[in-house]
Image 1 (cartoon, rainbow, N blue to C red):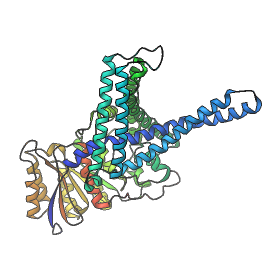
Image 2: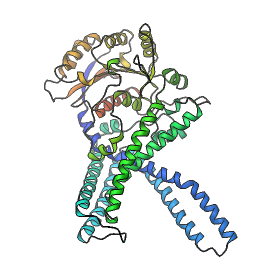
Image 3: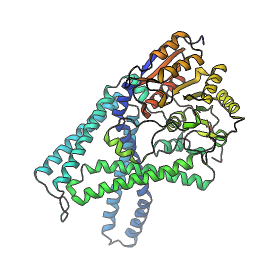
Length: 496
Protein backbone atom coordinates (compact mmCIF):
# COMPACT_ATOMS: atom_id res chain seq x y z
CA UNK A 1 0.00 0.00 0.00
CA UNK A 2 2.57 2.52 -1.22
CA UNK A 3 -0.13 5.15 -1.85
CA UNK A 4 -0.52 5.69 1.89
CA UNK A 5 1.62 8.73 2.67
CA UNK A 6 0.81 9.51 6.29
CA UNK A 7 -1.88 9.32 8.96
CA UNK A 8 -3.95 11.99 10.61
CA UNK A 9 -6.40 11.91 13.52
CA UNK A 10 -9.73 13.67 13.34
CA UNK A 11 -11.59 14.23 16.64
CA UNK A 12 -15.34 13.93 16.16
CA UNK A 13 -16.18 14.95 19.75
CA UNK A 14 -16.17 18.76 19.24
CA UNK A 15 -18.34 18.48 16.13
CA UNK A 16 -20.70 16.03 17.82
CA UNK A 17 -21.12 18.33 20.84
CA UNK A 18 -21.84 21.24 18.51
CA UNK A 19 -24.24 19.11 16.47
CA UNK A 20 -26.14 18.06 19.60
CA UNK A 21 -26.32 21.74 20.52
CA UNK A 22 -27.66 23.08 17.24
CA UNK A 23 -29.82 20.15 15.99
CA UNK A 24 -32.91 21.77 17.55
CA UNK A 25 -32.94 24.60 14.99
CA UNK A 26 -33.13 22.52 11.77
CA UNK A 27 -35.82 20.41 13.44
CA UNK A 28 -37.89 23.47 14.35
CA UNK A 29 -37.57 25.00 10.89
CA UNK A 30 -38.39 21.72 9.14
CA UNK A 31 -41.37 20.87 11.35
CA UNK A 32 -42.75 24.40 11.15
CA UNK A 33 -42.67 24.19 7.36
CA UNK A 34 -44.41 20.81 7.39
CA UNK A 35 -47.02 22.19 9.78
CA UNK A 36 -47.86 25.12 7.49
CA UNK A 37 -47.75 22.89 4.41
CA UNK A 38 -50.37 20.70 6.09
CA UNK A 39 -52.56 23.71 6.94
CA UNK A 40 -52.34 25.02 3.38
CA UNK A 41 -53.33 21.59 2.04
CA UNK A 42 -56.27 21.37 4.46
CA UNK A 43 -57.52 24.85 3.55
CA UNK A 44 -57.00 24.59 -0.20
CA UNK A 45 -60.12 22.64 -1.20
CA UNK A 46 -62.52 24.31 1.28
CA UNK A 47 -61.21 27.70 0.19
CA UNK A 48 -62.23 26.99 -3.41
CA UNK A 49 -65.66 25.87 -2.17
CA UNK A 50 -66.05 28.99 0.00
CA UNK A 51 -65.18 31.25 -2.93
CA UNK A 52 -67.68 29.48 -5.18
CA UNK A 53 -70.48 29.57 -2.57
CA UNK A 54 -69.79 33.22 -1.76
CA UNK A 55 -69.96 34.23 -5.43
CA UNK A 56 -73.19 32.26 -5.98
CA UNK A 57 -74.86 33.66 -2.83
CA UNK A 58 -73.77 37.22 -3.60
CA UNK A 59 -75.23 37.00 -7.12
CA UNK A 60 -78.48 35.22 -6.23
CA UNK A 61 -79.15 36.89 -2.85
CA UNK A 62 -77.92 40.49 -2.98
CA UNK A 63 -79.26 41.14 0.55
CA UNK A 64 -77.00 38.48 2.14
CA UNK A 65 -74.85 40.65 4.41
CA UNK A 66 -72.45 38.21 5.94
CA UNK A 67 -71.14 36.37 2.90
CA UNK A 68 -68.50 39.01 2.34
CA UNK A 69 -67.46 38.94 6.01
CA UNK A 70 -67.15 35.13 6.02
CA UNK A 71 -65.23 35.25 2.78
CA UNK A 72 -62.91 37.92 4.17
CA UNK A 73 -62.21 35.94 7.35
CA UNK A 74 -61.50 32.75 5.47
CA UNK A 75 -59.41 34.58 2.90
CA UNK A 76 -57.40 36.15 5.74
CA UNK A 77 -56.73 32.72 7.22
CA UNK A 78 -55.68 31.39 3.85
CA UNK A 79 -53.27 34.29 3.34
CA UNK A 80 -51.88 33.74 6.85
CA UNK A 81 -51.23 30.04 6.25
CA UNK A 82 -49.74 30.57 2.78
CA UNK A 83 -47.58 33.39 4.13
CA UNK A 84 -46.56 31.17 7.04
CA UNK A 85 -45.52 28.43 4.65
CA UNK A 86 -43.35 30.76 2.58
CA UNK A 87 -41.79 32.20 5.74
CA UNK A 88 -41.03 28.77 7.22
CA UNK A 89 -39.83 27.57 3.82
CA UNK A 90 -37.35 30.45 3.77
CA UNK A 91 -36.40 29.73 7.40
CA UNK A 92 -35.81 26.06 6.64
CA UNK A 93 -33.68 26.74 3.57
CA UNK A 94 -31.72 29.47 5.34
CA UNK A 95 -31.15 27.32 8.42
CA UNK A 96 -30.05 24.25 6.43
CA UNK A 97 -26.89 26.09 5.37
CA UNK A 98 -25.87 26.65 9.02
CA UNK A 99 -24.19 29.90 7.99
CA UNK A 100 -23.34 32.81 10.28
CA UNK A 101 -26.37 34.60 8.86
CA UNK A 102 -28.60 31.71 9.98
CA UNK A 103 -27.09 31.98 13.45
CA UNK A 104 -27.81 35.72 13.60
CA UNK A 105 -31.41 35.18 12.45
CA UNK A 106 -32.06 32.54 15.11
CA UNK A 107 -30.45 34.69 17.82
CA UNK A 108 -32.83 37.54 16.89
CA UNK A 109 -35.85 35.19 16.81
CA UNK A 110 -34.84 33.66 20.13
CA UNK A 111 -34.43 37.03 21.85
CA UNK A 112 -37.76 38.33 20.51
CA UNK A 113 -39.57 35.15 21.53
CA UNK A 114 -37.93 35.04 24.98
CA UNK A 115 -38.73 38.70 25.72
CA UNK A 116 -42.36 38.26 24.67
CA UNK A 117 -42.64 35.11 26.77
CA UNK A 118 -41.15 36.86 29.85
CA UNK A 119 -43.56 39.80 29.55
CA UNK A 120 -46.64 37.57 29.14
CA UNK A 121 -45.56 35.20 31.93
CA UNK A 122 -44.75 38.01 34.38
CA UNK A 123 -48.09 39.72 33.66
CA UNK A 124 -50.01 36.48 34.03
CA UNK A 125 -48.30 35.48 37.29
CA UNK A 126 -48.70 38.96 38.77
CA UNK A 127 -52.41 39.20 37.88
CA UNK A 128 -53.77 35.76 36.94
CA UNK A 129 -56.74 36.05 34.63
CA UNK A 130 -58.42 33.71 32.21
CA UNK A 131 -58.58 34.88 28.60
CA UNK A 132 -61.69 32.78 27.94
CA UNK A 133 -64.62 33.64 30.28
CA UNK A 134 -66.14 30.71 32.15
CA UNK A 135 -63.00 28.56 31.94
CA UNK A 136 -61.16 27.50 35.09
CA UNK A 137 -57.83 29.27 35.35
CA UNK A 138 -54.63 27.28 35.57
CA UNK A 139 -53.49 26.43 39.07
CA UNK A 140 -49.92 27.39 40.10
CA UNK A 141 -49.07 23.69 40.30
CA UNK A 142 -49.66 23.45 36.54
CA UNK A 143 -48.66 26.96 35.43
CA UNK A 144 -45.23 27.05 37.07
CA UNK A 145 -43.89 23.80 35.51
CA UNK A 146 -45.24 24.88 32.10
CA UNK A 147 -43.55 28.28 32.42
CA UNK A 148 -40.28 26.68 33.53
CA UNK A 149 -40.35 24.25 30.60
CA UNK A 150 -41.01 27.08 28.14
CA UNK A 151 -38.17 29.10 29.71
CA UNK A 152 -35.89 26.07 29.33
CA UNK A 153 -36.89 25.81 25.66
CA UNK A 154 -35.91 29.42 24.96
CA UNK A 155 -32.56 28.92 26.74
CA UNK A 156 -31.86 25.84 24.58
CA UNK A 157 -32.97 27.71 21.45
CA UNK A 158 -30.67 30.67 22.15
CA UNK A 159 -27.78 28.36 23.02
CA UNK A 160 -28.30 26.56 19.71
CA UNK A 161 -28.44 29.86 17.81
CA UNK A 162 -25.18 31.07 19.34
CA UNK A 163 -23.73 27.62 18.55
CA UNK A 164 -24.48 28.11 14.85
CA UNK A 165 -23.09 31.63 14.99
CA UNK A 166 -19.78 30.55 16.55
CA UNK A 167 -19.25 27.28 14.60
CA UNK A 168 -16.07 26.83 12.58
CA UNK A 169 -16.18 26.29 8.82
CA UNK A 170 -15.08 22.66 9.17
CA UNK A 171 -17.82 22.02 11.71
CA UNK A 172 -20.44 23.59 9.44
CA UNK A 173 -19.29 21.41 6.56
CA UNK A 174 -19.91 18.24 8.57
CA UNK A 175 -23.11 19.39 10.32
CA UNK A 176 -24.82 20.56 7.13
CA UNK A 177 -27.32 18.04 5.79
CA UNK A 178 -26.81 16.52 2.35
CA UNK A 179 -29.46 17.59 -0.14
CA UNK A 180 -31.51 14.87 -1.88
CA UNK A 181 -30.27 13.90 -5.33
CA UNK A 182 -33.84 14.01 -6.67
CA UNK A 183 -35.32 17.10 -8.30
CA UNK A 184 -38.75 18.69 -8.60
CA UNK A 185 -41.71 16.98 -6.93
CA UNK A 186 -39.65 14.08 -5.58
CA UNK A 187 -37.17 16.39 -3.90
CA UNK A 188 -40.01 18.34 -2.30
CA UNK A 189 -41.61 15.17 -0.98
CA UNK A 190 -38.30 13.98 0.51
CA UNK A 191 -37.21 17.31 1.96
CA UNK A 192 -40.50 19.00 2.85
CA UNK A 193 -42.52 15.97 3.92
CA UNK A 194 -39.77 13.63 5.06
CA UNK A 195 -40.47 10.67 2.80
CA UNK A 196 -37.82 7.90 2.85
CA UNK A 197 -34.99 8.77 0.44
CA UNK A 198 -35.64 5.62 -1.64
CA UNK A 199 -39.44 5.88 -1.63
CA UNK A 200 -39.79 6.34 -5.38
CA UNK A 201 -38.16 2.95 -6.04
CA UNK A 202 -40.56 1.08 -3.74
CA UNK A 203 -43.36 1.09 -6.30
CA UNK A 204 -44.96 -2.35 -6.62
CA UNK A 205 -48.30 -1.03 -7.85
CA UNK A 206 -49.90 2.38 -8.17
CA UNK A 207 -52.10 1.75 -5.12
CA UNK A 208 -49.18 0.64 -2.95
CA UNK A 209 -47.18 3.65 -4.11
CA UNK A 210 -50.06 6.02 -3.32
CA UNK A 211 -50.51 4.34 0.07
CA UNK A 212 -46.80 4.76 0.89
CA UNK A 213 -46.83 8.46 0.01
CA UNK A 214 -50.08 9.05 1.95
CA UNK A 215 -48.79 7.29 5.07
CA UNK A 216 -45.49 9.17 4.86
CA UNK A 217 -47.37 12.49 4.69
CA UNK A 218 -49.47 11.51 7.72
CA UNK A 219 -46.29 10.49 9.57
CA UNK A 220 -44.53 13.75 8.80
CA UNK A 221 -47.61 15.80 9.73
CA UNK A 222 -47.98 13.88 13.02
CA UNK A 223 -44.44 14.66 14.18
CA UNK A 224 -44.79 18.25 12.95
CA UNK A 225 -48.00 18.65 14.98
CA UNK A 226 -46.32 17.09 18.02
CA UNK A 227 -43.56 19.68 17.74
CA UNK A 228 -46.14 22.44 17.53
CA UNK A 229 -47.92 21.13 20.63
CA UNK A 230 -44.74 21.55 22.68
CA UNK A 231 -44.32 25.09 21.36
CA UNK A 232 -47.96 25.94 22.05
CA UNK A 233 -47.79 24.48 25.56
CA UNK A 234 -45.56 27.32 26.74
CA UNK A 235 -48.14 29.96 25.83
CA UNK A 236 -51.51 28.27 26.35
CA UNK A 237 -51.79 28.42 30.14
CA UNK A 238 -53.61 31.83 30.15
CA UNK A 239 -56.47 30.02 28.34
CA UNK A 240 -57.24 27.75 31.29
CA UNK A 241 -56.43 24.40 32.78
CA UNK A 242 -58.40 22.47 30.18
CA UNK A 243 -56.37 24.04 27.37
CA UNK A 244 -53.08 22.99 29.01
CA UNK A 245 -54.22 19.40 29.52
CA UNK A 246 -55.68 19.20 26.00
CA UNK A 247 -52.45 20.38 24.37
CA UNK A 248 -50.40 17.93 26.47
CA UNK A 249 -52.75 15.06 25.53
CA UNK A 250 -52.60 15.97 21.84
CA UNK A 251 -48.80 15.83 21.96
CA UNK A 252 -48.89 12.17 23.00
CA UNK A 253 -51.65 11.39 20.48
CA UNK A 254 -49.56 12.81 17.62
CA UNK A 255 -46.41 11.06 18.84
CA UNK A 256 -48.28 7.72 18.92
CA UNK A 257 -49.73 8.34 15.44
CA UNK A 258 -46.27 9.21 14.15
CA UNK A 259 -44.74 6.06 15.66
CA UNK A 260 -47.38 3.77 14.14
CA UNK A 261 -47.25 5.31 10.67
CA UNK A 262 -43.42 5.37 10.68
CA UNK A 263 -43.26 1.63 11.22
CA UNK A 264 -45.73 1.01 8.40
CA UNK A 265 -43.90 3.40 6.05
CA UNK A 266 -40.55 1.76 6.71
CA UNK A 267 -41.99 -1.69 6.11
CA UNK A 268 -43.51 -0.57 2.80
CA UNK A 269 -40.29 1.26 1.81
CA UNK A 270 -38.08 -1.82 2.33
CA UNK A 271 -37.13 -2.93 -1.18
CA UNK A 272 -35.11 -5.67 -2.81
CA UNK A 273 -31.74 -5.14 -4.46
CA UNK A 274 -33.01 -6.13 -7.91
CA UNK A 275 -35.87 -3.57 -7.72
CA UNK A 276 -33.52 -0.76 -6.73
CA UNK A 277 -30.90 -1.58 -9.37
CA UNK A 278 -33.52 -1.69 -12.11
CA UNK A 279 -34.57 1.89 -11.30
CA UNK A 280 -31.50 3.69 -9.95
CA UNK A 281 -28.62 3.32 -12.41
CA UNK A 282 -26.04 5.22 -10.36
CA UNK A 283 -23.03 3.35 -9.00
CA UNK A 284 -24.11 1.90 -5.62
CA UNK A 285 -22.90 2.49 -2.06
CA UNK A 286 -22.13 -1.00 -0.70
CA UNK A 287 -22.74 -1.72 3.00
CA UNK A 288 -20.90 -4.75 4.42
CA UNK A 289 -21.37 -6.03 7.97
CA UNK A 290 -21.58 -9.29 9.90
CA UNK A 291 -24.97 -11.02 9.69
CA UNK A 292 -24.88 -11.79 13.44
CA UNK A 293 -25.65 -8.10 14.06
CA UNK A 294 -27.42 -7.12 10.87
CA UNK A 295 -28.28 -3.46 11.46
CA UNK A 296 -25.63 -2.45 14.06
CA UNK A 297 -27.52 -0.57 16.82
CA UNK A 298 -26.06 2.79 17.87
CA UNK A 299 -26.33 4.71 21.14
CA UNK A 300 -28.62 7.73 21.36
CA UNK A 301 -26.85 11.12 21.16
CA UNK A 302 -26.90 13.52 24.09
CA UNK A 303 -29.53 15.86 22.71
CA UNK A 304 -31.63 18.37 24.70
CA UNK A 305 -34.78 17.20 26.50
CA UNK A 306 -36.91 18.84 23.81
CA UNK A 307 -35.35 16.61 21.14
CA UNK A 308 -35.82 13.51 23.30
CA UNK A 309 -39.53 14.29 23.63
CA UNK A 310 -39.95 14.59 19.87
CA UNK A 311 -38.03 11.34 19.31
CA UNK A 312 -40.25 9.32 21.68
CA UNK A 313 -42.07 7.65 18.82
CA UNK A 314 -39.07 7.03 16.60
CA UNK A 315 -37.14 3.81 16.17
CA UNK A 316 -33.72 3.44 17.78
CA UNK A 317 -30.98 4.56 15.40
CA UNK A 318 -28.79 1.99 13.70
CA UNK A 319 -25.99 2.16 11.16
CA UNK A 320 -28.23 0.85 8.38
CA UNK A 321 -30.67 3.78 8.70
CA UNK A 322 -27.92 6.38 9.06
CA UNK A 323 -26.14 5.10 5.95
CA UNK A 324 -29.39 5.03 3.95
CA UNK A 325 -30.07 8.69 4.73
CA UNK A 326 -26.49 9.85 4.13
CA UNK A 327 -25.55 7.57 1.24
CA UNK A 328 -28.65 7.79 -0.97
CA UNK A 329 -27.81 11.29 -2.30
CA UNK A 330 -24.61 9.79 -3.75
CA UNK A 331 -25.91 6.41 -4.93
CA UNK A 332 -28.33 3.57 -4.10
CA UNK A 333 -27.36 1.94 -0.79
CA UNK A 334 -27.18 -1.85 -1.18
CA UNK A 335 -26.23 -4.83 0.98
CA UNK A 336 -26.46 -8.59 1.18
CA UNK A 337 -29.49 -9.80 3.10
CA UNK A 338 -29.24 -11.87 6.25
CA UNK A 339 -30.14 -15.50 5.51
CA UNK A 340 -33.49 -16.41 7.02
CA UNK A 341 -35.01 -12.90 6.91
CA UNK A 342 -38.78 -13.24 6.65
CA UNK A 343 -38.97 -9.67 5.35
CA UNK A 344 -36.19 -7.22 4.39
CA UNK A 345 -35.61 -4.70 7.21
CA UNK A 346 -35.72 -0.98 6.53
CA UNK A 347 -32.36 0.26 5.33
CA UNK A 348 -30.06 -0.73 2.49
CA UNK A 349 -31.74 -2.61 -0.35
CA UNK A 350 -31.05 -6.30 0.29
CA UNK A 351 -30.04 -9.01 -2.14
CA UNK A 352 -30.30 -12.62 -0.92
CA UNK A 353 -27.75 -15.23 -2.02
CA UNK A 354 -26.92 -18.82 -1.10
CA UNK A 355 -23.81 -19.75 0.89
CA UNK A 356 -22.14 -20.84 -2.34
CA UNK A 357 -22.69 -17.52 -4.12
CA UNK A 358 -22.45 -14.73 -1.52
CA UNK A 359 -18.72 -14.12 -2.08
CA UNK A 360 -19.28 -13.70 -5.80
CA UNK A 361 -22.10 -11.24 -5.08
CA UNK A 362 -19.82 -9.20 -2.80
CA UNK A 363 -17.11 -9.19 -5.47
CA UNK A 364 -19.53 -7.96 -8.16
CA UNK A 365 -21.06 -5.25 -5.96
CA UNK A 366 -17.67 -4.06 -4.66
CA UNK A 367 -16.36 -3.74 -8.22
CA UNK A 368 -19.37 -1.66 -9.32
CA UNK A 369 -19.64 0.41 -6.13
CA UNK A 370 -18.78 4.10 -5.98
CA UNK A 371 -18.00 3.62 -2.28
CA UNK A 372 -17.88 0.79 0.26
CA UNK A 373 -18.72 1.04 3.96
CA UNK A 374 -17.72 -1.98 6.03
CA UNK A 375 -18.51 -2.40 9.73
CA UNK A 376 -15.78 -4.59 11.17
CA UNK A 377 -16.44 -7.35 13.68
CA UNK A 378 -14.28 -10.37 14.42
CA UNK A 379 -15.91 -12.88 12.03
CA UNK A 380 -14.54 -15.00 9.21
CA UNK A 381 -16.85 -13.38 6.67
CA UNK A 382 -15.67 -9.86 7.53
CA UNK A 383 -12.00 -10.85 7.30
CA UNK A 384 -12.62 -12.41 3.88
CA UNK A 385 -14.30 -9.17 2.73
CA UNK A 386 -11.39 -7.08 4.06
CA UNK A 387 -8.86 -9.22 2.20
CA UNK A 388 -10.96 -9.10 -0.96
CA UNK A 389 -11.13 -5.28 -0.85
CA UNK A 390 -7.35 -5.10 -0.47
CA UNK A 391 -6.59 -7.68 -3.18
CA UNK A 392 -8.83 -5.89 -5.69
CA UNK A 393 -7.59 -2.37 -4.84
CA UNK A 394 -10.92 -1.15 -3.46
CA UNK A 395 -9.45 0.26 -0.25
CA UNK A 396 -9.21 3.80 -1.62
CA UNK A 397 -13.02 3.96 -1.86
CA UNK A 398 -13.70 2.21 1.45
CA UNK A 399 -14.70 3.52 4.87
CA UNK A 400 -13.80 1.07 7.63
CA UNK A 401 -16.02 1.46 10.69
CA UNK A 402 -15.56 -0.55 13.86
CA UNK A 403 -18.60 -2.21 15.40
CA UNK A 404 -19.53 -0.22 18.54
CA UNK A 405 -18.86 -3.22 20.78
CA UNK A 406 -15.27 -3.41 19.42
CA UNK A 407 -14.35 0.25 20.02
CA UNK A 408 -13.79 0.27 23.77
CA UNK A 409 -10.60 -0.53 25.62
CA UNK A 410 -9.16 -3.24 25.75
CA UNK A 411 -10.63 -4.63 22.46
CA UNK A 412 -9.89 -1.59 20.31
CA UNK A 413 -6.09 -1.90 20.03
CA UNK A 414 -5.89 -5.63 19.09
CA UNK A 415 -8.60 -5.24 16.43
CA UNK A 416 -6.87 -2.19 14.95
CA UNK A 417 -3.58 -4.07 14.91
CA UNK A 418 -5.16 -6.98 13.06
CA UNK A 419 -6.79 -4.58 10.60
CA UNK A 420 -3.48 -2.83 9.93
CA UNK A 421 -1.84 -6.18 9.23
CA UNK A 422 -4.57 -7.49 6.91
CA UNK A 423 -4.80 -4.18 5.07
CA UNK A 424 -1.02 -4.25 4.47
CA UNK A 425 -0.67 -0.71 5.71
CA UNK A 426 2.86 0.68 6.09
CA UNK A 427 4.37 0.30 9.57
CA UNK A 428 3.94 4.03 10.50
CA UNK A 429 0.22 3.90 9.63
CA UNK A 430 -0.26 0.67 11.63
CA UNK A 431 1.50 2.21 14.61
CA UNK A 432 -0.67 5.34 14.36
CA UNK A 433 -3.81 3.20 14.39
CA UNK A 434 -2.86 1.21 17.47
CA UNK A 435 -1.52 4.33 19.23
CA UNK A 436 -4.91 6.03 18.70
CA UNK A 437 -6.70 3.21 20.58
CA UNK A 438 -8.03 4.21 24.04
CA UNK A 439 -5.85 3.51 27.07
CA UNK A 440 -8.56 4.39 29.59
CA UNK A 441 -12.20 3.39 29.85
CA UNK A 442 -13.75 6.77 28.97
CA UNK A 443 -11.04 7.96 26.60
CA UNK A 444 -11.87 8.71 22.94
CA UNK A 445 -11.75 5.55 20.86
CA UNK A 446 -11.19 4.86 17.18
CA UNK A 447 -14.56 4.25 15.52
CA UNK A 448 -13.28 4.18 11.94
CA UNK A 449 -10.77 5.30 9.36
CA UNK A 450 -10.38 5.76 5.62
CA UNK A 451 -7.72 6.79 3.12
CA UNK A 452 -8.48 10.23 1.70
CA UNK A 453 -7.75 11.46 -1.82
CA UNK A 454 -4.26 12.60 -0.78
CA UNK A 455 -3.35 9.12 0.44
CA UNK A 456 -3.57 10.03 4.12
CA UNK A 457 -5.14 7.60 6.59
CA UNK A 458 -7.86 9.65 8.31
CA UNK A 459 -8.36 8.15 11.79
CA UNK A 460 -11.77 9.07 13.22
CA UNK A 461 -12.03 9.17 17.02
CA UNK A 462 -15.03 9.73 19.30
CA UNK A 463 -15.77 9.30 23.00
CA UNK A 464 -19.18 7.71 22.40
CA UNK A 465 -20.55 5.31 19.82
CA UNK A 466 -23.63 7.44 19.25
CA UNK A 467 -25.62 7.75 16.04
CA UNK A 468 -24.29 11.31 15.65
CA UNK A 469 -20.66 10.10 15.90
CA UNK A 470 -21.16 7.49 13.17
CA UNK A 471 -23.20 9.98 11.10
CA UNK A 472 -20.32 12.47 11.20
CA UNK A 473 -17.80 9.72 10.37
CA UNK A 474 -19.88 8.82 7.29
CA UNK A 475 -20.08 12.46 6.23
CA UNK A 476 -16.32 12.89 6.71
CA UNK A 477 -15.74 10.01 4.28
CA UNK A 478 -18.52 10.65 1.74
CA UNK A 479 -17.77 14.35 1.40
CA UNK A 480 -14.07 13.71 0.97
CA UNK A 481 -14.94 11.30 -1.84
CA UNK A 482 -17.91 13.06 -3.51
CA UNK A 483 -17.99 16.63 -2.16
CA UNK A 484 -21.09 18.38 -0.83
CA UNK A 485 -23.16 18.10 -4.00
CA UNK A 486 -25.29 14.96 -4.48
CA UNK A 487 -24.82 12.66 -7.46
CA UNK A 488 -27.91 13.31 -9.59
CA UNK A 489 -30.12 10.39 -10.49
CA UNK A 490 -30.86 9.68 -14.16
CA UNK A 491 -34.51 10.08 -15.26
CA UNK A 492 -36.73 7.28 -13.97
CA UNK A 493 -38.66 4.97 -16.19
CA UNK A 494 -42.17 6.09 -17.08
CA UNK A 495 -43.62 3.40 -14.78
CA UNK A 496 -41.97 4.97 -11.74
